[in-house]
Length: 179
Picture 1: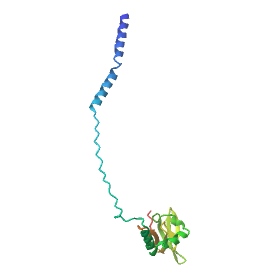
Picture 2: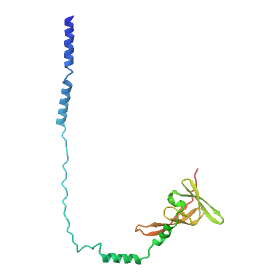
Picture 3: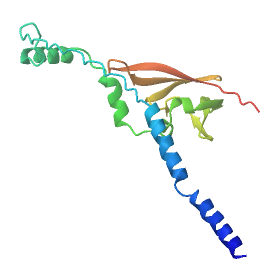
């Protein structure tokens, strides 16, 4: 019985000794193999382009801040008719409620006659407004010039590509509701 205990104790010691170190050694060996196999590849950096400085030739270039040229330009601008007369009255008047909305967010949904004057029905943000000739609409100082059964015409004041204020005509077409 005693020899049987020593036998099992020996088997346990041999079994436990197999658990120590072998996994760690295998892991260390595998990592060393992987490091040996992997070689990083870094592409070479291209050489920078050569900078060639340009010589400054003062005589060949027009001086932008010449006082005589600035004075001539100011006189020329003053002699041309100014289009700021279009925008000045618009800036001094009180804005109407429908000038807070862009024209493309509005829809004309109907028209009627009140006391012989045409009135258009316009919806904005699910609210219905009555507008007449002379009322203002949209963000571009749009003033209603004509109301018919099918459309509402306005005169807008906008800036062109050169920054000048110009008039343009815009319309709102009658929108029929689909159910």
